[in-house]
Length: 290
Image (cartoon, rainbow, N blue to C red; front, side, top):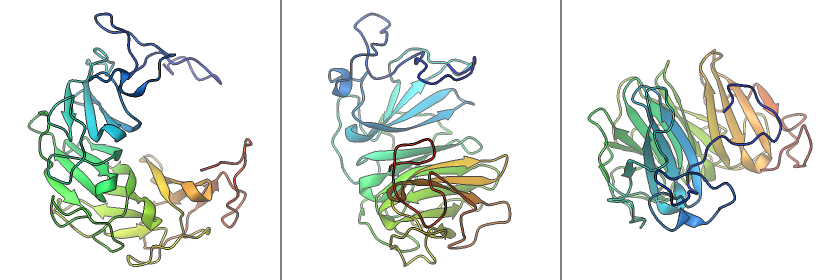
């Protein structure tokens, strides 16, 4: 709870994934087992969260369980309880097998929510694709995705380096003002930009690329225009800035998008390094490591 501010090492106010047996269940902060059981209360390497403040839902990418869990929230967007209400990527809460299909996932690692169109984007990492779920009609367990990016259909899951392919995408961010989806295409050492203002079609080409000069170059480098295995993204709508966790370069890149996006454009700033050509890691107040 950050309403009173932030202090270094402050305690968490609540917890999902490790619970006691009371009804309703309470958190146990010193319990850290896989799946809390296993049962439908637990996680196995959760990777990302997203919140829908309009319909009061919290989404959690439960990576090693190959699913996304959905928690209903109250009108103030607080947890109703600590038990998930729906699941995507699996038919029920006790199945966690991976597959390449319209209803299954394989190690989802990134989430982004589009509140204007009631869409959830899921970086289905090991299927080398990003799934799109249209939630305007509600959520049902194991419901099919409505569209797919990075693949021509829901049963093709091969990785590649092109304008329409991905390789282990990890992070997502959505710009609701300009209807742009950003995808951290991790193993291609780049961030893809999709212009969704005209709608979404399966295998639609990315409109722009950051971290590479074009859509067929996917090499690693440490520079102002290149990336190394980017994994996390965040978008600042007030200042039109994109933040990229450039993992293998042990830094965070900042892109000023106020003047538009061009392929291979230079980052405007860097955090974790003194300049754009230094990519060494360290443990300090100014450095990062992965």
